[in-house]
Image (cartoon, rainbow, N blue to C red; front, top):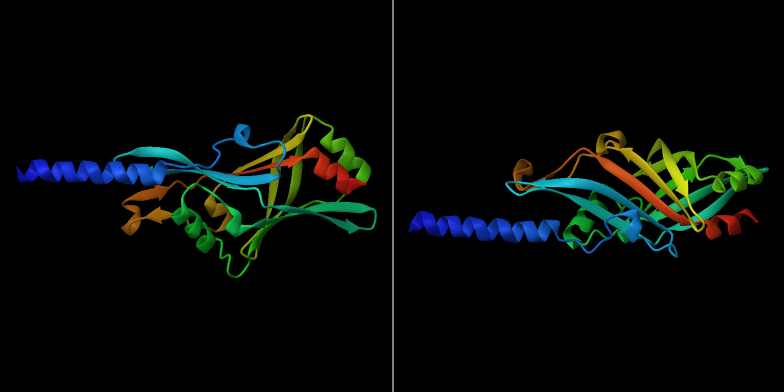
Length: 202
């Protein structure tokens, strides 16, 4: 009887754990992002003891895009408030705030390379292109290259990397990651309205 009750307890516990960790109200892909918003998001995956793995997505549509001029050249700076990420789990979002040290630097900053206005206009009219820039996380600046695809309304970028690239330890839950562990894999995405870019080019 004791072993039977113990089995029921563990089953109920891990079922609840599975629901808490894997349930998410955040969008799970670029298809879920409205073309009327400028957004960024991260995507990673987490494994939970005995329960398998699932994607984790943190969305942020509170970004600001600023043009930075240098003579005839122009760069775009995207300010991303760390506290604006929504993964569908308050606990996870608070952990992201801690990892990215939002109390010291409230924004992530992505700055594109400098190009002249005509080249920018030609670039966003292409079906796809590479976009180089610098991503600043917690005071650490890292070169990144996004693969960008475009349609009539939006430019969507994707950069596949890992936590180690940014000198960040993959998050874990429980002692030594016994409950849940995040793989050292990270996707960074953005979706920006073409209209937003075109307005800043004029």
